[in-house]
Length: 188
Image 1 (cartoon, one colour):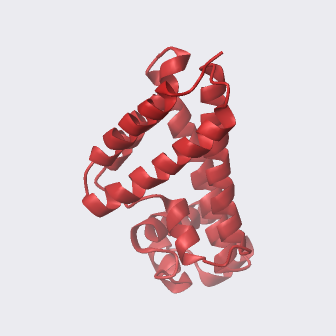
Image 2: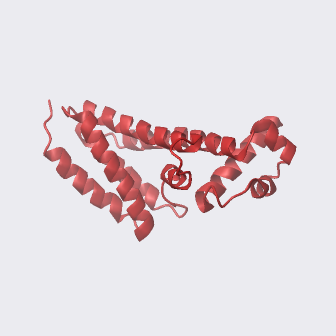
């Protein structure tokens, strides 16, 4: 029973935080919509901040798994996999509930770089960079770590632009830029 209450809290909070923002959603709203009582909430989380961190950690694991599976499902040769990340993003941008990157949104709301929520969101971005670095290394790029940083900049820019424009097109534009960057780089 306790695990079910925790799961409902996490699920409800994730949906509300993503749709409306972390600051806009209070604990009372989460309790009402999840059907979990206040005492149960505090048995699972010492504070709203702890809930935010738990939501981000769960979303991070699921999002990175989705990205990896999306890239792998395309069964592309290693040299084409880094660009497949942008194809996956286009799919994400097409979703009705797309509201940008939960981690960028959280970093904007939790502007204090020392806050735990900000650090968890930044760690997610570092993990995505690491995944891109892995793809680029497997594709044989000599400067894969530096390229990964550049591609993450394109990923984040595409996400923000997709929110602003309300289309999937930013993923295609970012993919074309990434292809040009990669074409100019040496591979071993």
